[in-house]
Every structure is written in C-alpha cells, then in structure tokens.
Length: 482
Image (tube, rainbow, N blue to C red; front, side):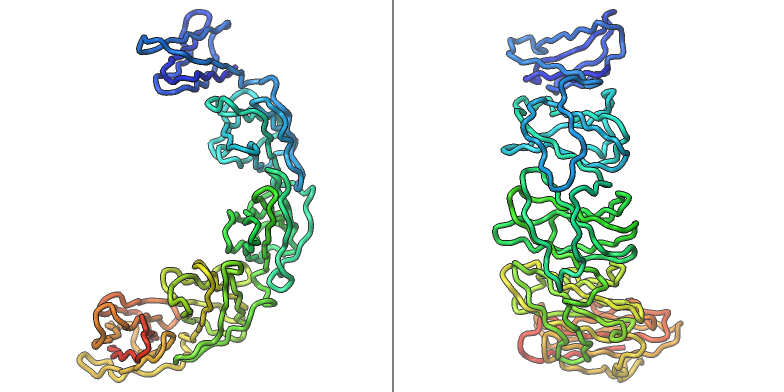
C-alpha cells in the first residue's frame, strides 16, 4: 500500500513506523510532503515532531494512493466537450479502456492546479507523464492534487486519447486559397479536432491567424493510429511532415470562449501562393510579399520547371531590418533551406520538384519584402575572373541597390587551392560593404567570407556570389580576388 501525507509546515518532521517499530520512511527536514510505500507489518503509525524543539502549529493530512477511495471517475472525452468542473474530490480516476497516448490535466476556472499521476497500486507514473501527455495501459490510473495545494476546491479534468475520433470534423488543406479554419473554443479545457484530407508522405503548413479578440490555437497532429506527427504550441508558423497512416487529425487547444483562426495548407499546393520568378544578377527583384501583424505569412511558388538545382535567395524590406525569414519547402514538408540571422542563404534544390516559399514576418506593424532568387548552379550565367594568378588583376563591380549582386565562375582542377575574397576598400569601418559566399560544382556551399578571404579546394569549379551589405543610396565598389 502507498500513502501520501502532508503537513502545512516544513518544520514539522513526520516519520512512519510499522507495528514492530521499524522506520518505513521520513519526510526529512525540508519538505512538507511525503510519499511512503508501506512495506512493513500493519498497523502503521506516524510520529510528528518539531525538529528544533519549539512550539509549532500545523495541519496534517494523509491519503491512500493505492486503490484510492472517493476519486471522481473520468473517462476519455470526445472533442468539443468541456470537462465537468463541479467535482470537489482531490483526486480523479482516469479510466483507460484502450492502450494509447493520452493527454490530461486539471482544469479550474480561476487558478492553476498541479498534481501527479499514479498507477492503481500507487506507483508513480513514468516521468514523461509529468508533462500531462504519455502512453497509458488499459486500467485505472489516479491523478491527485499536489498535497501542498491545500485549497483545490472544485475542478475538472481534461482527458483525451490520441486515437479519439468522436467530435472530429472534416476540413480542407488548401487554406491559403479556401481561407482559414475558424471557430470558438467553448468552456475551459475543451479540445477541438479537424480531420485532414492530406495523404501520407506530404506536409502541411500550420499558420496561426488569431483574430483581434481571439486566441492563438496550439495544434498537435496525429495519424489514424494515434502516432504524433508534429506539435505547434501556438506558433504562427510551423511545417508538419505527415509520415504516418492517413487520415490525419489536427487537435486544437486555446483560451476558453475565445475565437481562433488557423490556416492549414498542403506544402505541395501552389494555389494561394504568388509566383516567384527567378532574377538575374542585377538590382531588380522577382516578387513582393506584404505582411502585417494579423497576416504574418506570405506564400510564393517555385514551379518544378522554373528553378535550378542551386539558388541563392535574398530580401530587403521597408523597415530595413532582418525581421523575418524565408523558408523553401518541398511537397513532403522537408525544408530545403531558410534564412535565419541574415536575409540571404544558399539552397540546393531537386530538379523537377515544385517548391513553395513562405515569408514569415516576426517584426511589428506591417512591412513589404522584396525578394530575389538567383541561379548559382553549373548552368548559371556568371562572369569569368579577370585573373586567377597570385598578384593578378581583380574583377571590379559596382553594386547599385540593396538587392544588387554579381556572380563569378572560377574554373579549377580538383587539386587546386583558391583564396576567394571581395574587397570594398573605400568604405568606412562598419559602413556599406559587400558579402561573399561560394558553392562548388554541385551547388554545395563551401565558403562564406567572414574575414579577409576564405579558402576552398576539391572542386572543378566554384560560383562566387557577391552582394551588397548595408547599402545606403550610393554605389558600393568592390574588387573580387581569385
């Protein structure tokens, strides 16, 4: 048998003995809670003392965790149903008929409650269950309020199986064309479920669009067997790869009595995504992407026959800040490349595959991005270097806009070693300058200039990309050395 005891003061030491006087367990001197497995001979006794020997006022409670009595019964709930908040017992019996992954947790109108899950025999559940989601075997399980929460009063318990289908409603997966899924969460603890038409092996974008008086929806996607595919905890942008068995279900949670909007869009679907033409190496751009604090994403499409096998992408914007990212994703939901702390990155793409690019705004207010993508594959039309000899002539360029860039193709033997660099010598320190990066003959990034130069070897050719950095309304002159 297992029991749980609690004293309102940590200065009160509690020790449990069996009928022979053998000590079974003790609370120690720094804890007000005590979990004790009673393994000796009954009856058991508890001694209570003030360790410093001073007067101490305390309250003492004890409850049996194995085969507990008086716990309110909770069975797995259908989606769209709010838990009953009226029971006042400090424990709940969670009844599992089918082994699966379950999510559970206390629900209270005016406060947070904490507790723990135990097996029917009082054994603590697996450590991962402490997060409110884990696999549960058939049978009864006991969730009890943390004994230090002395005033739990009435509360409910949400309890959902990952295999649950009751209450699920069908939805679309072309939300950028058909519009967001919209609704309102009911009472506290309610979960909603959307069944997706998406096939296995594909991916979906999950794009939060909370209304002004609403809530962001946290989303977890499961397959038909209850296997978790992904989890987007209220983020405005997430890519989910669906590798399990269809049909897939998106389970939503959010703030009670608040409206939500969520765009679910298949990653291989171009409808609702604007065309993003390829640009040359000059100062023009191929697409624009307006974003706001309400609509933080803008989708662009790269048709299967309109991109090369290696490209560089870059953007500038009205706020002149790196306040977002660009993510290129294939139909399976695999991200081919994305920008992070910089506005530009290099991408290796598969020939004949359609990609979508999602521009995700992380700033404030509104903005408009101007974007370029340029060919840096073996078929790219690039200038030849003026010289590849030590001390030879540099290749000069003048970059005339924030998106201006040039490329240089350097022929080589695989055993050749090169120093590559771009020098904007006449600019003040930390002023407008250039950035340089290079890829090998397969389009693989091999160099990004962080200092005076970078060194490469092992390829039969290289494509250097030189682009403007910190442009301020006048040409940036650079000399490229190879």
